[in-house]
Image (cartoon, rainbow, N blue to C red; front, side, top):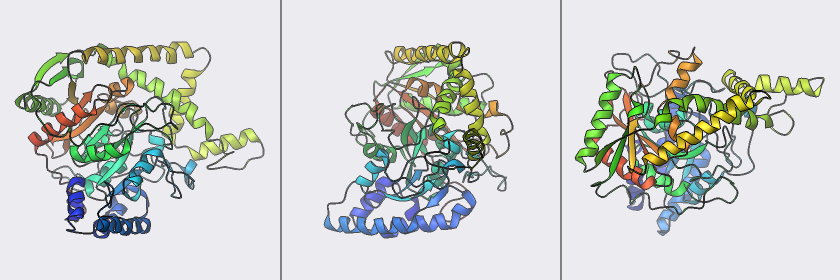
Amino acid sequence: MLTELTIAAARDGLRRREFSAVELVKAHVDAIDRLNGRLNAFITVTSEDALKAAERADELLGHGDAPDLAGIPLGIKDLFCTNGVRTTAASRMLENFIPPYESTVTANLLRDGAVFVGKTNLDEFAMGSANITSAFGNVENPWKREGDPQTALVPGGSSGGSAAAVAAGLAMGATGTDTGGSIRQPAAYCGIVGLKPTYGRCSRWGTIAFASSLDQAGPMARTVEDCAIMLQSMAGFDPKDSTSVDHPVDDYRAACSGSLKGMRVGIPREYRVEGMPAEIEASWQKGIAWLRDAGCEIVDVSLPHTKYGLATYYIVAPAECSSNLARYDGVRFGRRVEAPTLDEMYEKTRREGFGAEVRRRIMIGTYVLSAGYYDAYYLKAQKVRSLIRRDFTEAFEKVDVMLTPTAPSPAFAQGEKTDDPVQMYLNDVFTVPASMAGMPAMSLPAGLSERGLPLGLQLIGRPFDEKSLLAAGHALERAAAFTHRPAIRAEGV
């Protein structure tokens, strides 16, 4: 089936003329028509534009000079501005916003021939870890617990729409953004691969900001090789982004091969948290054994400030969110609620435009930045962040990559933990430290839980050494031999 091909296989098939780009894109558009009403993975579907782009791709393929991603159908997280296509950030504040420009990441993908089938759902302004805060409704995970086909599970967040779309066969790959784990955690919950590159590797220009010192775009796909192919297109220096780093773009696809003999893999002892389920520990041990069998040297390492990562993140990220979201005031763009005075207009616009979780984080961020609390909270958090980064730097003097679990549990049911914000924040306990340090990290599926749900393993690498992540990830992927067959997929239920 065309919707079950990998990006790598589809690229080869298109060039061998085994099927056309129109056929490939139409298969995915039809899958969206059948399943998006249930999964709610897309906020905006761009079927007509996608089929026209597929026709153009077929012309280029026929001439033999097609770019690398010609005809490949992708989903775009609705946080990336797309020229002439509605971009909402899953918020009522931007419900009708149509950007007059293209984000750098999506422009790079279009340059390389990718076909966008729609804008994927997310937690509002990327704030959440279950994709239940979107103003356009919850996203449903296409996986089901064994013996429980009725209960809807969360896909993780904030890039839950992208993860669900890829897992269910509605798109061959998708863009995500990762602030504290928003690519890796949904990838783990939905049984796909998600890669957060080094901070500064992919441009943030044209991507709606949550926390500017943390946000990073990255690829989500069914295989490590597919993520490598997407990253090759997405990465690169961008002078329009002051946080973009001018560093050469490696041949990421070539990294997905070769021997791992001699690679040193660190196992951080602090990631064995109290109360971690036995199946998560067992999955981790299995991953360690697989890498050892592949020729890696396993090394115990310590990241002593990891225990402060989550608390530090939930000071720094809300503070930056409070600053970034101050621009949504009803004056320049986005929603405006009329009122007799300017102050009332501000208040009503922001009250009606932002959901509960966004308002909560704005209030936390405003508090920690306020006079009298700045030194006690925000400044102290930045000092701890420096210590977290130093831990990683020192550990990477001894090892090439690190291996940890991605999430403390498999996907849970919608409504199961959502009444307690602290419990929701704990879903990011394993992913936040790498984000705070700006390190590249990747989640890949490594097996199933006792109830048949995907479990993810996380690899963390040195800055701008995505090649080592991809090499180790490819070896883990081969050893795991994971089958991407969720209960709900493009071929039906």
